[in-house]
Image 1: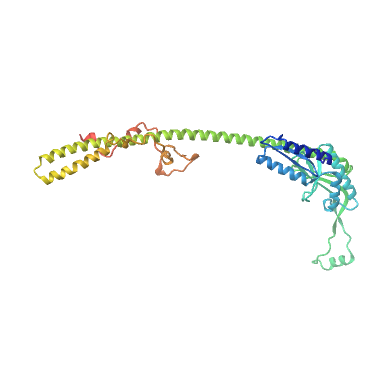
Image 2 (image 1 turned 60 degrees about the horizontal axis):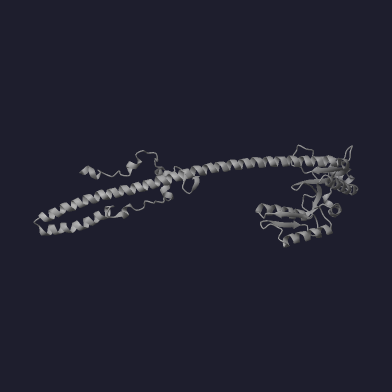
Length: 383
């Protein structure tokens, strides 16, 4: 509500207080208002999010800073002579021009305003809630020849190197000019007294401002559309990348677990085979110890036999089941890397690999045979 009277303000204050006191505001919302005592009254039901809070602060500060009521606006312009670059004779007309422009703007739903903080932008036209266009009212100037005094003329003739007063001076022409601070060069931005005074061009000026704002809004919407499309495309790409990474991680977990179990089984098989051969060796040693005529040699062999049988029992998975523990294997990051190519086990992104960390060929049909590959001959080969 634009600058309501005190009675209206008081009624809204009572309504806001009653709504909060009686629990009419939803739990997840906030009832905000500004302009309690002066200026425009703005009331908003907000969800309290960061974007809402930022937008509300902009509205709240802008409403308190803006002076748009014509009497207050004219008084503030009169108190700041530097806002109008006009001669004293044209100042009353310039003030009437501001008043007329403010009236035309209000009838078209816009507002001519000035900042209380005396920001450098000066007057501005508020079009809608988000568009502010700087308005500069000034008097045109021109360079005219200046009559030199006798002393200045004498100095100029004798001392060519000496600085004297310039031959031209800047003077006011008596023609008012209105300039809009538009961001585009497609529209006219200056209007000056000519056959028709600028006082009669206010409608054209406002229509130009509206066209510029409409074009900017369309460009903003187009940029937003492109940004939304780009964001959606990026999200799709990220989703596809994560899907590929999750598939690679699942396959890497399976292969790493299988290889771990295969290596454990191969080690148990080697232990079982070795234990059988150790027991066979111990049997042979027992025979040798019984047949030898050297008591010391027999005693030494008999000392080796129980120790060797203990080793065999520890290697034999049938006697020591702990050799086959760890069937439920949880791979760690380093266990997964050899199966991920250049994927990282930490997340869906690529990871540098050294040349000596080449990924394993997970499609090798003889991969399972490599679990049982041993250095030298297999145990059965020596039988």
